Amino acid sequence: MKKLITSVAAIFFSIVVFAQDKSKQIQDLLAIYSKDGKFNGSVLVAQKGTVIYQGGYGFRDAENKVTHEANDIFQIGSITKQITAAVIMQLQEEGKLTVQDKLSKYFPGFANGDKITIENLLTHTSGIYNYTNDEVLMKSDVTKHYSQKEMLDMIKAYKPDFEPGAKWNYSNSAYSILGYIIEKVTGKPYEKVVRERVFTPLGMISSGFDFTHLSAPGKSKGYFSLAGGKPVIAPVVDSTIAYSAGAIYSTVGDLAKWERAVTQGKLLKAESWKAVFTPQKNKYGYGWVIDSSFGKPFTSHSGGIHGFSSYLIRFPQDEVTVIMIDNSSSPHLGKISKNLAAIALGQSYEMPAVRKATDIDTSILKQYVGEYQLSPSFSIVVSLEGKGLRAQATNQPPFDIYAEKENVFFLKVVDAQLEFVKDENGKVTELILHQNGMDQKGKKIK
Image (spheres, helix red, strand yellow):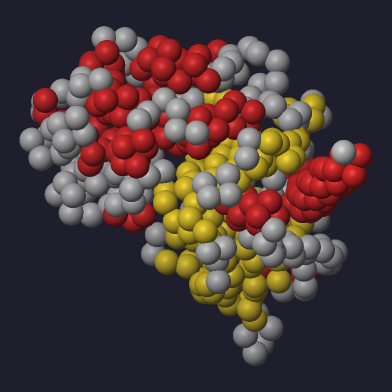
């Protein structure tokens, strides 16, 4: 008996050490990303329901130097969609709707309304224009309160992108309509339905909808950028704008409860979960992307809303989950999450390249100031700010760029480099944008 106990203890000890080793690898990797300005928020990594690592990085409130804690509250953006989809499937199980119902059954007046199904709305194949592509709306009206009628009238006014089912095009409009269908079928506000059917049963006590008026401790402030120690505060998108497409706020801990319920097949019947995770066009199911990595299937979704980004990825065979939420609009969470998942899965992973900035004389920097046109509708304006350069792309805020070499600069907010090219006379004539494995040239026009 003593020998058996010793053996069991040895096995337990090796598991604990292995978990600690993974936790250390995760911390080491996140420390690099955080220091490099690519992650500023909260993260949770779990396997089989056990948290391997959970922590907070960077500033919750950059102006007052308040640092993040492990379970701070953020807007999660489009991760909202998978919860909206689950409620739709619950209502189908209850016989209150079917995913083959036509949009016109609930809301007349839409172009192609007699052809668009609820399933088209769930899978981004409805052809309904995505209202968040409207730059005027996204720049000037995101903090305003919109009624259901105002939102529906606005969405109806846009010209359809294509015939229902013909193509795939991401549409927040479609998921907002799903929320309105939920309201019509249940006779209750969307927010109340989600709280009754998802948040309360799963104990998601830190999740909700009206982030604008939330006053809870741990509320994170959203930023368009924190680069160079110069916070660019983002406006809070009103919940009536983001709605059932992206209005939920939550924590990594609450989202872990949601993911665990998905893994354990709670809230829905097995046949409904199967439908949710059946990939259709563009590898998209009902509120989830279905793909594979490391030779294993995974399901995931990203989220992006003014000042916040999020990413949830799960490998169901190994019950590995990574949840990241960031308040600096980081575009790197997908890549970081897959590296963290690789650690949990015992796979090889990529260590981020650490770029070091060097000082360049102001007389040289002045040569690079100007406007560079990369396409008829896209330019980058480079300006001198103090002793450094800033770059501002069309319809984007300006960001600091840092010299790696005399003529090569890098950004911290995205994985991109700018290379300045001179002619035989030493005059700067063009810029090359190196990003996502592509090299895009821009002629200096000013």
